Length: 364
Ligand code: SOE
Image (cartoon, rainbow, N blue to C red; front, side, top):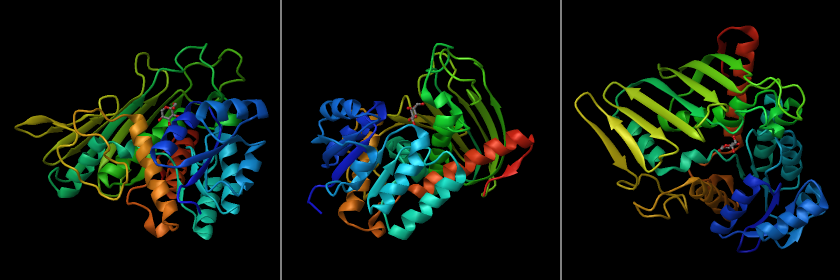
């Protein structure tokens, strides 16, 4: 392997370009881009600054010039491409959902383990320093026993019938949309920060807009509400929506314990709110640094706002550190892997099962 990790990106849309910036920030060499057509691949390679446009996704995966494959395609292509990449001996960064079915996600994680591959699913909100501050405070015991975990993840980019996207079509995006696309981020972040695991849940789904311009019949949900219990004795709920006017990307949580409550808002990530019976404060990012091992976790001093792209850069920095060290044993603590992609698929399946059965269901 070169000194620089060599990358290939499949899918040069919005998220592909976020990955390309992160590859550069991590010191990677963006070698190739593939897309749905040769023309799109060439345009993407030019725009993202890759050395060449691959003739196909399969060609990019087979290339000896690529060490890490970034899968940034529509959801239904994640599993087949990730499988090919693992079989070709590559490290894989696969967008969420890892697969559109739980079985496929489980198989991919097993295949990755068999190959000893470095894998990642970009649950990037874990890299906000204020979220890490919350995690450290929970772990320190200051918050006391957590008994209520609650919040929401709200967007508005699908809130009119003119809003059309491949995610709306279950054949391409998967049976769950709002929950599988953003609800899983909330669950991942809250489990990561709190240390709790959701053990059973009861869910509702609602398709608010049944017919969208130039789209097949809409069967995927615009809204999901989930109430749950955890292994460490807390209860909680989350509201997920892609049709909440004015809410752009509002991932918000509150973790309420015996002594303190902590709350974090992805749209205002420079601070963590900490409340107790007698006092409340807003803690600025960077007052304490709790985590080591992530190459790019804190490139910005306090007062220089950390954003979504910085989180992405940190994730890819972790992946490339592990790839450079050529071994999963070197994976930095907290880096989200295919195992976390399986966890998200399990919770999504439980949401679907709960709605179908109109009952509480266990989360495996
Ligand atoms: C669109 O809903 C989207 O880009 C998600 O797919 C991402 O995972 C989330 O981070 C932001 O919103």
